[in-house]
Image 1 (cartoon, rainbow, N blue to C red):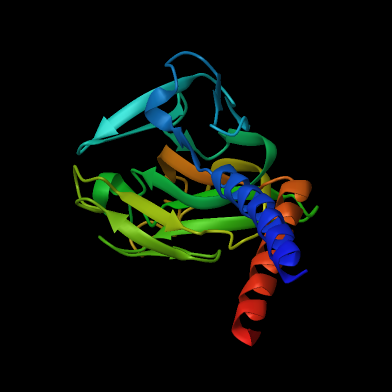
Image 2 (spheres, helix red, strand yellow):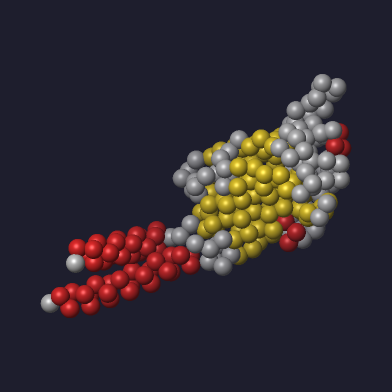
Length: 240
């Protein structure tokens, strides 16, 4: 009887491990890269390994822009050609909910570079749970920036200096809340004492964004069942 029980348990464990492996493989990452957007077009679509589709649309045509070894994409025309200005938008939507692992932006300066004054990137996020949020990234120094979301922000490359990258990486920016869509735009900056009206220079480029598609509920349930079975087997072995 004991042998039959062990054989049955091992069979169940095999199915559980298979389900767990399938779920692990489903936890793939997908990256949207600004340098892949085509100049002159206003829509970009890419499909991740698990089949999730990311669609990015501009308020006008795309235009790539490179500086200090980093290439990003913005909107053609406007106040600053090839960057996302105040009043311009880059909207990303996903065919299934995703967790945002990181976002990279560039050419966001703190001033006095290019007469900018603590430029501000603005993000409007729609979450899978029905909630929404508005978040701001503000360049405050050569290698420092303020972020109103979760996670952390780090400077990339030469930083906010003349001819520099002005690039920033946001890590786990919205925690573990699943995202349906995100709108990138710009907000008024913080004027300095020499020019109280100089607050409309905010602009930047979108470099890339890495996300983790959320597995379907049934797949997650299989993984949970697999973990329970493996835990039960481990407990039985300890008792014996």
